[in-house]
Amino acid sequence: MNTANAPPGNGRLFYAIEYRDDGTADVTLMPFEGVKIIVPGVDPWDGMEDDIRARYYAWCDSGEVLMP
Image 1 (cartoon, rainbow, N blue to C red):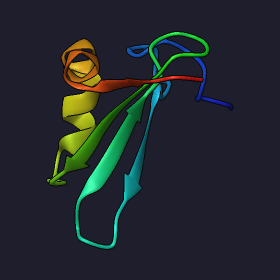
Image 2: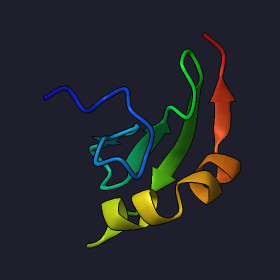
Image 3: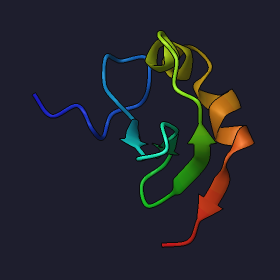
């Protein structure tokens, strides 16, 4: 089942996490088709993905919009 393009809360992912060599991660959020928001340099923690799903729009508000 492809889970990349359905809204959060429906058991589908609307984000990606890219881990960096320095131990941090860039979280890319995709709230709408064609829109990408990045939250760079996050210190990963256990439960981070649960937090992203629970507070998805707060994560979007804290990020930077990437131009397509």
